[in-house]
Length: 467
Image 1 (spheres, helix red, strand yellow):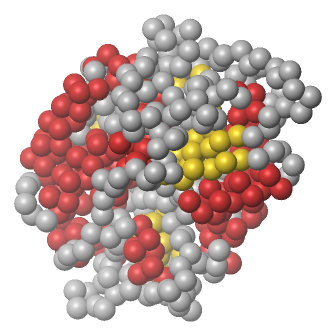
Image 2 (cartoon, rainbow, N blue to C red):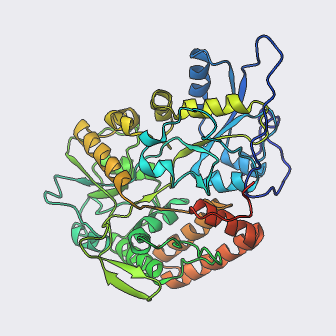
């Protein structure tokens, strides 16, 4: 873990404070007696320095006042227990840190009912309106979009349609001695966990099923259940056939694919100054599905019928949020900044600066090329845009619950996935080992506290923190 730089010390408090899960009501902002009110704001931007620089320039150039930006790494922010001093007004952060900031009481509720804030949620892509930012009936952050993970394939090597289910993947693999890899997916860092969750999503998420990764009543991990064991077993079998030796990041997967070194790849478009796009047709499809889904109540697999949603996409592995600091002394101005940043024009101009963000609004889908930046052909950009729209038209998706220490849960699961693929542990044992680590993380956070976070971020209201 890196040390906190001297520039960051004034912003970050290195004191642990276990605040209640939900922030208290929004403080009253006393109007300044000055003729010219102080219009300066201070923002903390986590792990996105290029975005931080652009934010300051544009906010000021539009005549909104000054914006002082402090860029910090996630490690620095985590070491500071996610605490912010009163001079910090807004924070831009990764999706996975939402639960930590809520648990530490660092986010101020954005009261959307109080006047016309101009947020225009109706124009937001559907799952960003709710699934990735909700906390019961409170708004504690606003979405800044996320890249859409899809299946890319070489149309010259797959003249017909790509596979529809994960189980079909092996039938599309090239001969063993081929110079082109059959399939690539991200397996480095936390990505191994995200890849497993993308695979298991269609089997565990369906209408009426809310407990997917944790049991909502007990916070017991469900990763040892049959759907997870089957998904990891299929994953291991596939990578044994592929003879996978390297665990790649999404960027490395994309670079190899566009360089012609893979037949299929799961990732998203990521511009590169070193990789030249080859001249072959690139196909794109949504994440794969499963032929069956698992009914946990009856403990049996059920064949998916034609009337059931076939694709359940996994969202939230990347993306950015903006929140207002709980102790800000400029609440109204800070909320105005968050609303401005999520607006159609500002977000379209600024968020393409972040490789961890993507189109946020329906109106952005006509300009997806601002995010892909020439990394895929124009014809593929149109397909990618259309698939993004389709994903958000679906009734359901799967997201990892925004609980405290989400990163630690994902890391434990990622280690289990890699150990199984490497042949160090059978899939069931690897997942059981991860589940034990999950139980310890939950106990460290506090069972009741984590349960409250889990239920509220999954859209269920309880009465404990409604002030």
